[in-house]
Length: 181
Image 1: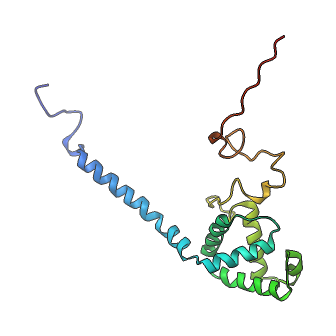
Image 2 (image 1 turned 30 degrees about the vertical axis):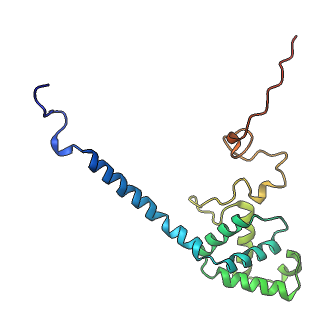
Image 3 (image 1 turned 180 degrees about the horizontal axis):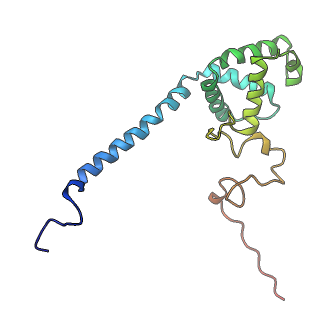
């Protein structure tokens, strides 16, 4: 082609490689910047707060609870409810006063209001795997949500994978020989 200027691509809209790379780095930086508040919130959730949240969770819920999921649920709940640590401390004080080992030992003595709402929110978060009912709520425990545990041997967790969440990562069971007729 003798003429280097093409008429189907105006020079005002042409991008060279450096402009594309600079744009990609800019977009990547914005994406990384968006994750900073979540990382800061998790970092601000102290080990003491995590331990108290796990203590009250184990009193409210008679199951073996995953500590990592508890940390994430507690961090998310503290973002939604800044006074969560005070409520957890109040619930633990009531439980300690009653020498509670299970929820039935102290829950009737929890006064109606913010403390009872916090206790019910903690129970709900563990069973549902989310901390709010919002359509864009972050899911913390899909496969390990407690609502699936009692029926896990007879109920399939909703998933595109046939054998359950993350089922595509496991080996398929071997096929048996086809019967001959």
